[in-house]
Length: 290
Ligand code: GLU
Ligand code: ZN
Image (cartoon, rainbow, N blue to C red):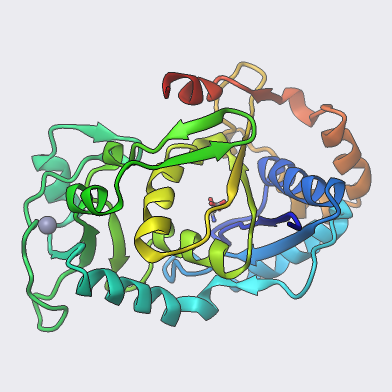
């Protein structure tokens, strides 16, 4: 089977070195396996997506010498498919409408999951539809039902090995919102299947999300890829890359005349500018999971 990877940035801001690293990993893994490397712009966050950041992404990748196969894919072109999948889940009784605000959820939550407060279940069991002035702001997955429906699941990370899926860590995740039919979890899972992605490469910060994606694949009858969660670029002191420290974006570097291919070569050789280094600490997430 041909390996298909993708780089899937959200055009909510300029790309930084962490994105360059992620793009190099996805590109080089595909090329090393004589596979395909796709570019998908995840532009479904209407409030935060900007056309200029999407444009700049294409220029940044070309500047780094990273060539993608086919045309750049726009996630926003798939919104109807996201809505249809949400409808399927609704018909199966696996999602319910929720009208809680973020503040209400935060106030009532007693546990915290990988994405923040775990939904306390206030609206679970509601069946009222999406219409009306007080219509739901979100559709949530009934996690216990979904897990009962799907049964025990495993998934494979190339680096961390076989994982027992633990979507229950997230509680009743949001799968759709009034303003976007597909949440990140739903949209990325559907689109990776639609694009024929066989190897999902992304940063360790999204490792836990894969538990939810693996569950959605079974509920929606989608193909199951292998994952490759890579280390994250961190500041020299091991702290998260902080934009406030003023590291220049890839576009800044490109417009300043820096050689992008040389930067990509440095990244491949593990030479990161500005005292940055790679964190492997997040791999511990994989080891905790039998
Ligand atoms: N679009 C997501 C982001 O920029 C990444 C999607 C993924 O790789 O799963 O954070
Ligand atoms: Zn609610």
